[in-house]
Length: 389
Image (cartoon, rainbow, N blue to C red):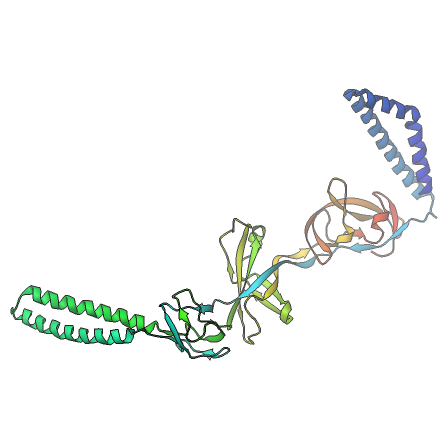
């Protein structure tokens, strides 16, 4: 290697002496573009000629000097392997059965019939508002309805017998139907004084106190929640849309309880949020142990890519040149010399990366041997000794 360096230096000094350097400086100072470009072409030709001569000298040295000790590197043989890639996102646990109950009519909160932590069934009475005389009004209206119904039936029979006037019959009918609807509306108002459970669940928090003045849709009474059926929601950048679909496998880590779950995506949104260019996914879960709670943070690892015959290379063995192109060094056996190989600078196309390995899409093939340890000490077309292959 020292011999090669001395020869290269001598040739360089011979062809690029001090006078040339001065001439180059003068050309640059003169600003003549054509002259500068001509000089550049001459220099490039000189460098290429020197590189070719250097290669010939190295090859000659390799053939003549049988005792020469080449740089020792290790190698790895590339074999196809199954590669599964996961993309990491953050999600949140939710439940659709998590509501705060508000009164629908104004009034005083007369009594609360449940306690925090109590399990309730759908339709079970949870709280009662004062009826503010609604029950009395209902009873009066029911009495009026009873009389109107009797009157209507009698007028109807008389009208069938052609007795009486039509207007009397129509008035009786109208009075009866109007009171019937009024009674139904009043019953609905009375029913709203009783707050019942909308689903099976647990009373999570009693917010109001008995005797409080309640405003319809404004004053919360209590929170009821059901944790049996949970779901994880997450916003995913739109770039992942082609690779994330329904039934895509997901690994979920819930740090706060130290639990890992395997599931599949159950819903993929069709709407792209214009504010953050993301779409929504959902993952349904069964919460048998009631460990999962709403608003817990979940770390999602979504399987967005899989290749049954991927060529994987350790990321540290992939280099990048000044133009941004990626390359590796493959090894070519030298005929007649055991454990001696020539390094080949091979440009590659990269795929996805994970766990310090990167998928190679093109540039190498199965069975190729790549330089591993010592990769940063070698150059293209260099002879090396390989400890393993």
